[in-house]
Length: 166
Image 1 (cartoon, rainbow, N blue to C red):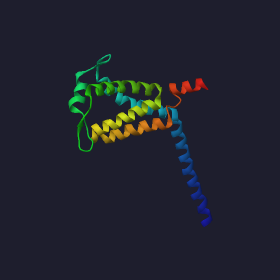
Image 2: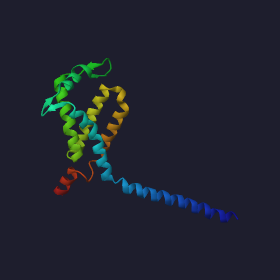
Image 3: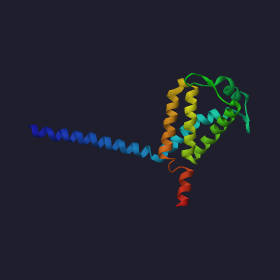
Image 4: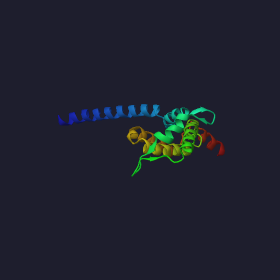
C-alpha cells in the first residue's frame, strides 16, 4: 500500500515541476534579453527627457524657471548643509543639455553605457538635491546599473556598430 502512494506523490511533483518549466519557458519567451534591455533604456530615458524638455524655450535657450531652480530652489543636502549649487547658470545649462542628449543616446542605444553612467551620476546629484525622493531615485540607479552591466542589447546602434566591425 505504501508503495502505491509514492508514485502518486512523484507524479504530482513532476506535474508541478513540468508546470513551472512551462511557465518559465513562457516568461523567457516574453522577456527576451534584448527586449528587456530596450525597456530598461526607454524606462530610464523617459523621466530625464521629460525633465529636460521643460528646461528649454528654444534651441540652446534655457527658460527662466530652469535657472531660477538652480539659483534659489535647489540645494545640495550634504553634511553641514544644505548648500547652494555652484555656478547655477552653468549647472542649469549642463543639466538641461544632459537631460536631452543622454536619453536620446539611450533610446538609440548609442554610447549606451556612457549615457547610463551619466544618468547614474545625475541620479546621485538628484538624490542629494531631493533626499525624500529616494524610492524613485533607487529605481533609476538600478536601471542605469543594469544597462551599464549588461549593455544595450541587440536592438541598439551599439550592437549594429559592433557587428559591422567584426
